[in-house]
Image (cartoon, rainbow over all chains, first blue to last red; front, side, top):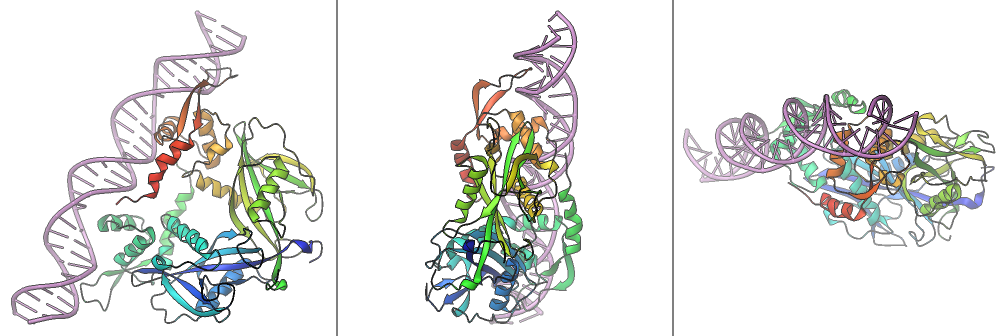
Length: 231
Length: 231
DNA sequence: AATATAAGGTGTATTTTTTACACTAAGCAA
DNA sequence: TTGCTTAGTGTAAAAAATACACCTTATATT
């Protein structure tokens, strides 16, 4: 790397908040650290970024190593670079979140590096995390909470076919408030971004609900106009 | 820096989009590069981050060196780390924007490092920039465009005392659309975050308008409730 | 077969918010 | 005094958001 002064080099890492939705609960994947510092603490999955890879690639790699999944919706949301956030020196951390479909997914392949175990933990029960990961988590959670109101990210967390009640539950968990069933359905359907399937829920011991799919084509068509200007 | 593997070190920098509003135009500060690569091109002000400083501090330093200003509203908005974005190797860049009061400000102290000159350029006339700075600019501009609709950032760009017409002009320039005067005033005043002053505009060759101030106290009081939940 | 259980699914009236729209008032300059 | 330029103001209509309760349907239980 000619011309770039080496004394400006910094250590930096990517950390990921991996969200999943299962049994009505929003969860994130945490690893239990096997090494100092913060041995025995829970932490967000993360790792160093190589000299030769793009940041985004590092994020994808971490997701793959934590879950075995590829081609997942990931988004960078903030970069943490305060002094003293890592006990061994200044470390820059670029934080991403990922939204994955937990339902149907069998097992999560746990990380071996630095990790004793990997667990899915309800966002309502997250303990104090290693380093400044509690802060990172709060910031990322806030990000998806804002985003869900104007971008179709909820569908990344649901199975491909879902009921309106499942969709509403997910909104309720992320927004942390109860929503009115009739108003929710009216509004969601008015966006005209769902495809109603000729299919119903199975294996429930009560009246089965209709299944829907997110329709990317309709979404693109109907929200193109969002970009143009009214008066 | 014991314990952290040196081969993960990366070069990284902070770049700033410094926005100013003057004579009805939204402008950013650009420097003309004096050195290769991209000698003679315009670029965002930026510099390497030292080992021993927090990212945010580097951003403040760059702002100070470019404008002589301190205690300015700055916000980090994205980190760029693709391969090939710098011809001499992989460079990570954390991007910030700053909102400053240009009106009343005399001169901008130009950067000497790497810079031939520093100029204020209307956001509508930005040429192709060095490196991937065009992309950084677009992303930052988009950020403030979104943000202005739900956060009181406009006031950072206006003089302390301003007229409603000036405020509306600023919204129009950032949102890139004409707004209705009556509706704009009605809505803005309904937020109850402005203090009407017993003072009028001076030095205009037509009827002088009332001056207003942004009232932080009112803002805090009235938008506390935003955080609580309705049904 | 009848009944109980549990969630699915639906409409309307009210309130609030957003939009569209045009003229008079004030101050300065010629 | 007249002309010019921007300041400042209200109302009606449309659209969006909210509040609210009952019947339907599928399964499980007796």
